[in-house]
Image (cartoon, rainbow, N blue to C red; front, side, top):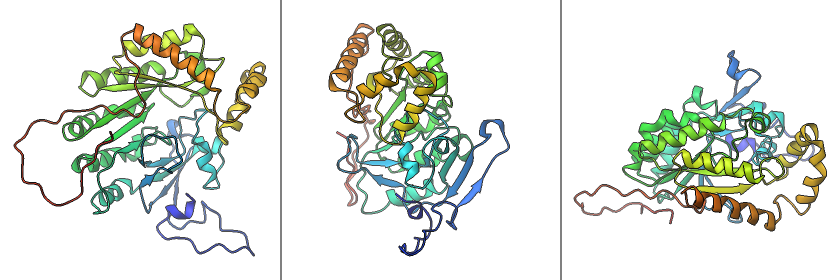
Length: 351
């Protein structure tokens, strides 16, 4: 998706005899904004009016869902391993520090989603959020796009799921509960490890792991079953048996309904940034990573299977069962008096 596809008016056809217009700053529909507050120091926001907000996942993707909503691009969580870094390159933005500090905000996301959900062409498919960058990153505290997005999904009884590292999701607890009364709602929190020193260096803009597990506990206490995506498990830094045990034990104590491990993967864009970080902080591991990831973005199958087996064994020991990442929380709708069916879009479920 190029920058001109995000603006209100499509750009003119590119010409090969002259440089293209600047992909970001040449767009008339962009408002560039900074805020003089400590939490947003050094961060620039690019407010745009998107043309579409429901994104279809490419058929070749490994993702277990077909539709996503991403109100932001770029992320102040600044996770050095984030696979979404490459997407900033599509906008001619830097995939390193630029991904952490140049945040694209689709300010019309709620109204646009409401309109698209009402279209006769939309058939109520499952919508996944937080799959590219975190929809509850710090910027959401100022722009407040998610309440409108959740309200639109709730009002259409459209099934959805959220993956987040952000504690801000608790602000929208009432909307999540209301949505769960009418449709399937899945919530997962990402906690790959509980080592505080590792957290401070690889996820510097995120809430601490324990604060994220407090989110799991709070959601569960309010009837919103919450799983944990144990991701990423970072080779040689967060994969020792004692580390895995400590993390799974903490996840179990939070009341998580499931734990799903995912080993670090290093796609282009993220790979270069992560390896530069590794060379600066753990230079003795560089050659080991080059060997482990010699065949591409993913660790070898034998390594992934080993981690998965260890985590699942620990989960069973602590009383939480493994689950497929795509499995949503199934919510039983309250029984009501049936009404005559009306013609209209068919409500589908994820499974």
